[in-house]
Amino acid sequence: MKMVFLVLFSVGLAGPVQAEELLYVRSLKADLYAKPSFAARQLATFAKGDEMVKLAGEDRWYEVRSGAVTGWVAKLLVADQPARAGKGVIKADSGIGTSARRRASAVATAGAARGLAADDRRRLSADNTTDYSALSYMEGINPPEAEVIEFLSKGLQP
Amino acid sequence: MKTMKSAKLWTAAAVLLGLTFLLQARVMAEPADFRARISEKLADEEITDADLAAEISFGREVAAHILGRYQLDRDDKLNRYLNLVGRGVALHSNRSGLDYRFAVLASSTINAYAAPGGYIFVTRGAIANMADEAELAAVLAHEIAHVDSRHIVREVKIKGEGGSAQAGLAHLIGAIGDPARVAFKQAVDEALDILFKQGYSHRDEAEADQNGLILLAVTGYDPGGLRRYLAKLETSGDPELEIYNRTHPPFAERLAALDRAATETGLDKVTGPILKERFDEQSR
Image 1 (cartoon, chains in turn blue, green):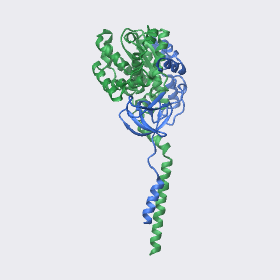
Image 2 (spheres, chains in turn brown, green):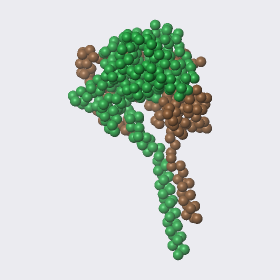
Image 3 (cartoon, one colour):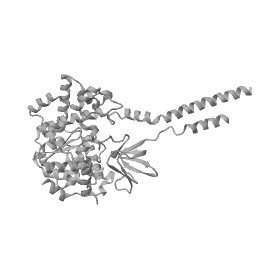
Image 4 (spheres, chains in turn green, orange):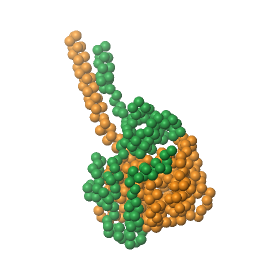
């Protein structure tokens, strides 16, 4: 009897072995629906970075819980890792931040940020197979996020 | 006898409690380990900053080649408009932190291209066949979906640690010497082959169509934008579709799959703005 009690007591102390699996909103926003359908009743709207507990998954949807609300969110908009920090972190010509799983050496990383060497670029441009001047023009068009959101709001908000 | 039995019982209890604490400690340590294991499991899904820099660098080279093949259309107003629409859609994607760039190509062919790292192009010919902003956003959403799913990076035949093409790319770009340069150039050529000759796999195209559909709707546009655009191209018989037809699955196949996806996601019952006036004002 004592043995049975001890076993039950031990199992109780161990608590839930399965840790909760968190999902993070990666999109600017993600709506929560009562059923796995964009036509279903909308229960809540999450913002980028918000976290929720994954309960189940099917083809294109996760069933999730956030606080007292349970519903369905499109898989495409969430991930098991939060979104990366601001855009500056990942610009092609900027330095690279630290990473727990860094595969490349510092030299490799610097090379990765530069891409081909300047000599290669000059040679390829001379061959008329590339156009870095046009690429610079393209990269120069850089409307800030606030302007993009305002532009969208003007056209798309009811 | 009773003492022996009691001692055994207490020993068993001690062992059980010890196991309990060990188990508890494992559960307490779970968050950090859990992430690490998930990262390993999804090695090709969760990429490092170095991988991402490599992808962007690779994408820049591919983009420079696209711009070498097609002339850039330096219409400031149209390019700015394209970037506002495209970035608006990209903000709703899973890789919303990526710096997406958009540009118009001065070509009468009807096509759009996505280079890794977020470099996206659409031709004048394609824009001329669009009726409204929802159709433009739909085409851009399809291209963003290719980048979001890293279709080209997965396709190029460079394998690094753990068999990941992304890791292979990072290693290759960081490497020094002619062999690495040749291999890098081969990877760029492979990407250009996908874009201009062989096309993406049908599976990747279907994924881009279906994810683009969701992306378009989540941004707030009419989800029917891509369907209307593709249906129009299907019946146009325009000779400027030659490359497009060579590199994409048949329209009928794509439209049928889009219809199935719209029904399955409930988007067949959702409508949204098409913004024809703004499109006409900004693009004509």
